[in-house]
Length: 434
Ligand code: SF4
Image 1 (cartoon, rainbow, N blue to C red):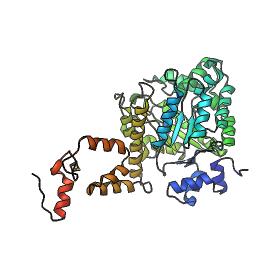
Image 2: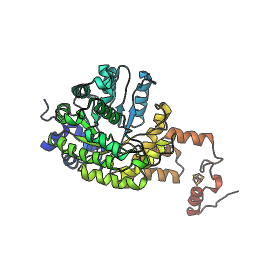
Image 3: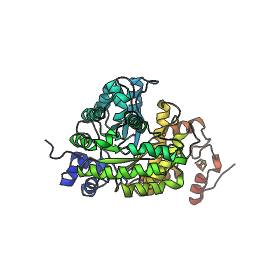
């Protein structure tokens, strides 16, 4: 019998959980350093008590930046086996979390399979699943139906749930008044908005927040406070709608912490580079250091097909300024459900962004592998270079396809290789070019 409900409560009571110990080890921290951060809500350990196969991870701005991979079937692409293949590939490639965004078919079976087989954190967006679970259209669902789906996901062992608690009936007027270019682009946020508009009722995730907290406390589900009003284009970034929702998310964070419920706060979205740092600081101030989970930010709107790059640029800046968790974006963003290759490209782009930010933030041990790579490059130790590479397969393939005449160069400069020339010059050797 556990003497605590959530990791936050355990930390506040001074109880060292197995999860806390493992996370401290992974982050090269002592338990004494990590515990107060979990107690204060600055680090979350998303580990539902029913997710028995989990290998716990911590999320917080002073820890290594974590990445999330969104997967799940839709009506147009509904092959559950293929989706499971993508999940396992994502886990093997280093994803720290999988969000199951399934919106078609037997979502319960898929979710349970994920929880039983996946060692990474599992997240869901219960509002998507409500329509599928009840097989009723949105306007025929009651507020309590949504809360029941949160309970089902919690019982199934989901580690974190995105809940769009921050919009209210006032938001309906606000969206009309401020005339955003892209209105609401959050799928969950748009469903909550549509439900409120059709039923004339308050947002159930806001109205029944206390009941939700009781459920999340019971199973230790971390709430990821969804940003329904995240900007969907550069023109909408940092507008009144976005900031007003963030203020409410700050209030809800406080209420969750009063019940020892762990919280992350979701963030933008599409955003010009020069606004990213300020947004991270505002979030940290308003939400008192709760980990920030950013969906991008995508730094330009005009690169469909390459949005893994626009998001990686924004993600690196956001994480170096305090975001703790990056949601990957794939080349198929805005266009289609990602295939296996898109998933791979999205993960690699996110990993680069996360690692670049960790170096900039001075996260413990983050730079070590770059220094190892530099040394291997100087002495042309290709095997060590592959070991250090984020995507060794691609690196090996490129070198193999365009082999140089001499092993101590690459085919870019051949014998004009600066590294080779300097090695020889410093060793007092003759430098042959022709
Ligand atoms: S050949 Fe040019 S690009 Fe290749 S390792 Fe040497 S300096 Fe670098």
